[in-house]
Amino acid sequence: MTVVRFTATALYRAPAARVFDVLTDWPRQSGWVPATVVHRLPGPVAAPGERFVGRTGLGPLAFDDDMLVTGRRAPAAGRAGRVEIVKTGRLLGGSVSIGVRDVGDGWTQVDWTEHVVPRPALLAWAAAAAGPLGALAGRWGFELVLRAARADVEDAEDAGDAGDAGDAGDVVGGGGGAVPPRA
Image (cartoon, rainbow, N blue to C red; front, side, top):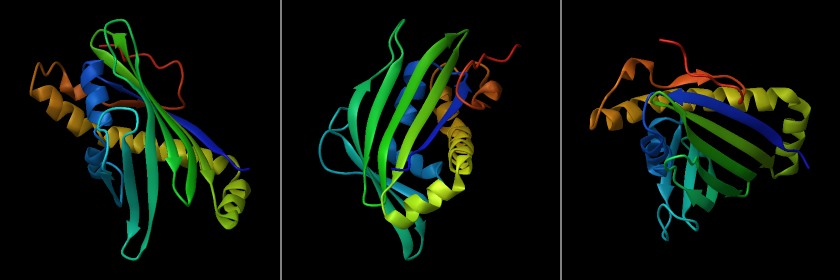
């Protein structure tokens, strides 16, 4: 079985709870993920059991990425937040884990990890043939998505104490050892 694994990491100058709320408002992601519209399916919202679909494509060339939230814990004082998702679609299976934690001095770190399992044999073959390029493309793509989310995080931040919004959304490659930039 072919599995494409990657982690994208970003730093935001905003409270962890706010970053978590913005990133897990699934339909809001339609504004960040290119050529994709995300909508919730009937059922629970902001809780395990929540289901949503990202439809990606142009015109008739599109596919659905069906997802089910299996775990959700919002960040709180001294505790990181995390949401766990299972991909249940016909084309893409696997899992997503989004971790959100306060790293001090008003900074929040996001680690977005995906384990993508291409389901049709031809798609799995193409992913295997691409080797590490699939993971690199996934990481790079989601770093761009996290950077695009910056405007929504800042807009949410502007509703409260804005802080230094110019530093929000710094993306750090690879997933590990991210340190807030020095002033």
